[in-house]
Length: 515
Image (cartoon, rainbow, N blue to C red; front, top):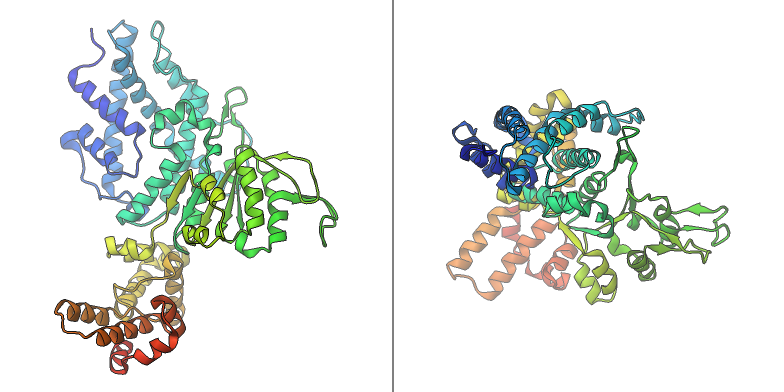
């Protein structure tokens, strides 16, 4: 008697693929559709918190679980009765069972995560571990059957909890229904589990601290949210004897904004210092690199601001995992993971001699780039309302929808859909607050001169502008957008006096009236 019928094997293949795929890529939807066939409910192209109430997402998951539960029992009974099963069949069976066990405990894991983030530091046994272990033994410890992976149940339980934490932090913090936002969520997931989740579960879970993550992107695009998601979703072992996780994920992330500190204070914060090592060092101090435990993460924001002398010291940390406190010669060991972020052009800084290439190449084993808000809205203009609603819910709660309607209408009337949002999501947040309080928002660089830009493009395509007319119009549009001659000159890379001399006053008045 074979283990699978042809139809069951096809279904198990889809579940196997689904279990190990990145949940934020389109493949997930394809696997669900193939597994459910005519029962599949159409879903949005992007899995986003802003569309989390969509019935389709919950419906497909529920239908998958309904099919898996009875199939798992049939397959277990067949194996116990001596059904023929080669290694490939057993892999499919094992994947099906592990996916089922994860889904069974998914909501209990979520409640544990919520409690920890709300400050509950309960140290009691994990109640749902026994249910997980019972299910694991029932389905994967069948007498006379040797499962291919040979997984330890405590390790799998730890991986399931990590998967749930990763999903929570990525899905809940990195919002947006555009494809760039979805690609960012997928990139963060890959940074945690790599592109091969099977290999990660087998061996890489022990080594991810060895790989530094560099997060780049414009200011206000959520680089710290990305870093926090990675840092708080690291693998934490589960001790089956005490029935507890060995560490508390909620206190494992240590952010440090380098641009807010002087070089001496940065060294003290990072490496610690010995009493008397500099003026004001009245006692020994433990730095963050020493505080950081093996499962913790240090986040270095604005790494591009780091003084070259400190870059040399950090390079040693990345190369040898050792450092010294200020005023000491004793080597101390760094055990955790480092995530760095910058909104600067590090390639240009290396070219200019302000950022060490050897330090950069130690940072860049894993790079994530956060998209600008303009990129996200260019892909999906309708997502503006959803983003405003997300912000409004955190501000006014019950009146979020009316505020979102008001803010979105104001933006479309006064800024237009082409407004560049140079401050990105952070600027959008302040726009919502400004409209809430004053029913207006004054952009720091002026509104987007969309109409003037459209007219310029049209005139260029019709080849009816002289070189001087082209320069005058473009300088005027940039000046109207930036709000000052100095900013416009910097944008255009010309002298501000040239910008002033090229302003078309009539066009400028039209642009200003339009805003």
